[in-house]
Image 1 (tube, helix red, strand yellow):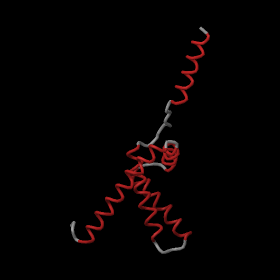
Image 2: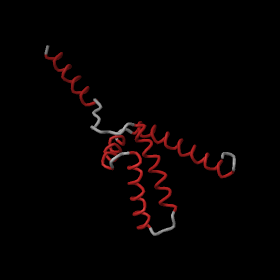
Image 3: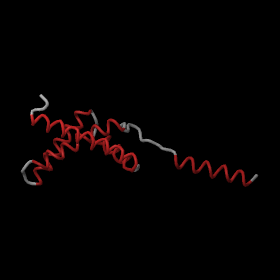
Image 4: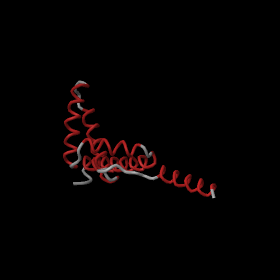
Length: 119
């Protein structure tokens, strides 16, 4: 009987440890991907402008605020969501694969527009 009780307690402990507790207000993966896409574009723009590093940092912060405003996301919610998803490398790998695919598609469309293939 003690063995059975010990086994049940052990199983309960293992099950409770592996339970996925999401913080309240967590961004969905799709929303997080969309915000991260715009963050990546914003970082690219800010780094491509030929200004001093300090100025590009200030510019990036302003542009980042606009990204959060566009997506109606508070920066604290974004940060909390990013910390949560970073705990799960498999999920982050999947999310970044989608982000890279989206950025590559946008780049391809942009190139075709420049070449006159797309109006």
